[in-house]
Image 1 (cartoon, rainbow, N blue to C red):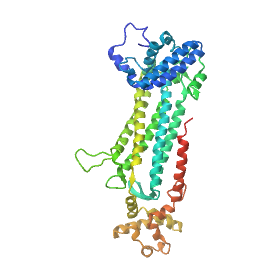
Image 2 (image 1 turned 180 degrees about the horizontal axis):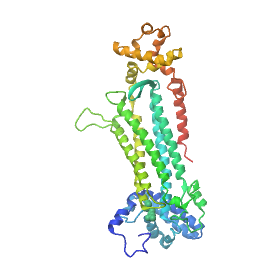
Image 3 (image 1 turned 45 degrees about the vertical axis):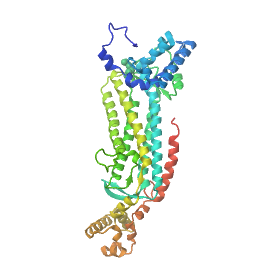
Length: 465
Ligand code: ARG
């Protein structure tokens, strides 16, 4: 069955039908299509196009389609319909009879596909937020398992300053919290009713658009029918939120691939999230994390594909837009899979706190602490910086570690150190204690931040508006 054809003398070529059909991927919109069509049947009744009896027949028949499709994925097997909208209408005809011919009154597939995608996206945004919250909770658990562990923080992948392990994990908590906000915003933007727009010029029937919006839980109705016809901004918003999330997951993956390497040796990833080698018996490879990093590229690629597809389209609907759905579905699948995988990896992580601690103690992550302590006592910071720099250089020449410097040795090295009690700054913990500032790695503030993060997670898991 086709939703058009009167104007044609012959049907589409087999090649064109195969080339243009979208049922293979837009079948994922089936449930949304049914729900949207049920609401539309009620709108047709209010507009006097369907009688209450006809509406009841249509809504009930649509319900059986939804039920059957959910119970039996084979319902679509072998279907040759152009797209999911055509498929649903054909089945509706088979099940409800002639009245099905009225369901498309004053409605265009251009607005229908927008409606279906918006309904679908609301669910996808909720799912992303739930996946984020679960991962964030796992990160907080991992932080709480080692509340006092010290690690060297890196810039340029060189040991920079000591931080608490929970402080490091809370950095990712913040990134993911922002991602959650982006999905809430993407949902809010998608949550606008397109129905009533017609193909591009507005429907020719007196639909009460506010009533349809209320029926389907939309917060507003769209303001311009030409805009609606080709508006995919809401898809871009979702893809951007998904890309940013994947970027964060990818960076976390990269960190943990490094930290679990023999060279770092801080982390042990669970057996359940690692793979062996078919050749090298000793290997335990972090494939789960590598795949997250790899999939980030795919999701970013889908955002790029969508942007490129949209940039040259003349105003209102063009069939190019159909190519956006596989991009959206693929991105959503990779995102949800990666969020789940990252959570399971986080649950499996065992930290060996003594290794990063030793890395912090044997390197000069305390250098800044020392320079700042001198500055607090009145030495101009520039001088303090120079002085500690030369102390580091001297240590490297002598083969000394920070802890090798006693009060006496420091005083002998430079008069600024005399009697200042600076040797205690050779312990990374001392420097962290000097960073008791909101957002800093001071132990008291980190404890607080951890507790606050737990509380914030509660509000995040509450349903979105
Ligand atoms: N499958 C189409 C899509 O996803 C539905 C809209 C069809 N509209 C049209 N004018 N051919 O874009």
